[in-house]
Amino acid sequence: MGESVAEATITNWLKKVGEHIAADEAVLEIATDKVDSEVPSEVSGILSEILFKENDVVQVGQTIAYIETEGGVVVDAPSEATTAANDDITTIEKKVDAAREAVAAPVDFSASEKFFSPLVKNIAKEEGITLAELEALSGTGKDGRVTKTDILEYVKEKSQNPNAKLQTAPATGNQQPTTQNTQPATAQKAAPVSVNGQDEVVEMDRMRKLISGYMVQSVQTSAHVQSFIEIDVTNIVKWRDKVKAAFEKREGEKLTFTPIFMEAVAKALKDYPGMNISVDGEYIIKKKNINLGMAAALPNGNLIVPVIKNADQLNLVGMAKAVNDLGNRAKAGKLKPDDTQGGTYTVTNVGTFGSVFGTPIINQPQVGILALGAIRKVPAVIETPEGDFIGIRQKMFLSHSYDHRVVDGALGGSFVKRVAEYLEAFDPNRDY
Image 1 (cartoon, one colour):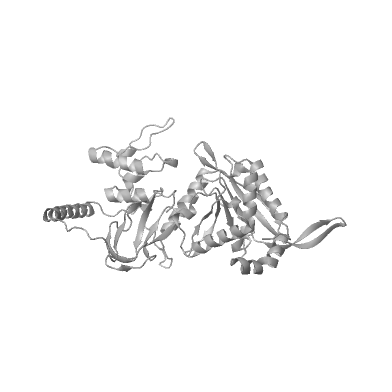
Image 2 (spheres, rainbow, N blue to C red):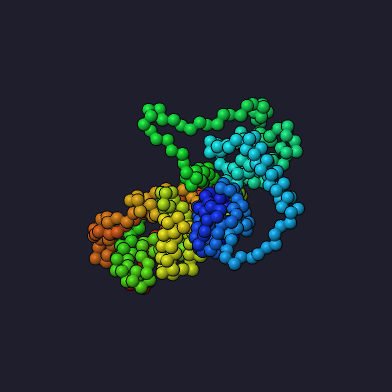
């Protein structure tokens, strides 16, 4: 799943025990914080045992199921004593599971306005922790989020002392103590109801809830400021029209404008490494590699940001192949968890939807994101040695959002200007 992915949630088993599985056939679907993906079987055989249920959180490296292959290893039959012991254990486990189900009814954590990770939610459900308890828990994570360690410590403390009061975040400044902890918990928010009976009420899917949380967190975290610049891309449009057929015939790839823009952004990041950073609290992390995120559409209409690793080391052909590969796999829902990790700067193409420019939200913990506007034919003043005249040119806007906590206007403006300079200086006679 990639070095940066430590765990995933099982969302759906595509195969049942006893069913035959072909090599490379998808067995189950999993979800991380950023991407949903399928897990294929490495062998052909019969699914003999499933070790984790749907919605269970599994660590990378854990065995999740057994597949019985032809000519499999023959093991000694268990002794009668071992069989009896296993039966006793199974009986006890069933009683424990039944007791848990009887005591702790499923809790709808989506009713909370706070953001909780899938891992924290699953631990809360398994341990019978209510929504009120979870919301009142003081988190040590970023922006007060409840981490895995926080909830496990609470579970341990609760098991040792069931009558202990929940520790909430301490008051700051000159606030006076209140009886907040002794008040009854606020009732969960009920699902909205259509007043006139004609409106349709639809709950957000899992991905949209995650996107919603990320966007709100980003706006609350970063001081967003924008710089806009209009550029002339006439030479790029003419060059692409001239070579795109030959490019596709030779390389087997379509040549879009995106890899051309990505190439310019990667060059500008090398010139201005102050944009290729991330923020962790009061610390700035200077990134060695230039990994460009590109916003792409998923089959359900949601957006995701796969990452082109070491983009500055790719030529135009390599960049085109990387862009097309990630874009096609995003549309087909075939992205892997590691495909969305490690980005250092993001580019989004709002021109695809006809927008002239936009004000994109920063992809945390990065400090900048560039929006590419639609390319339009417009009348423009053209300067020549013989004088100025009006002509038709292909132009577009670049919209640069950056984090004013660590990026000042001089750096943010200079960076987008450098991208514009690379694009306007594009050689119409270059090879690809």
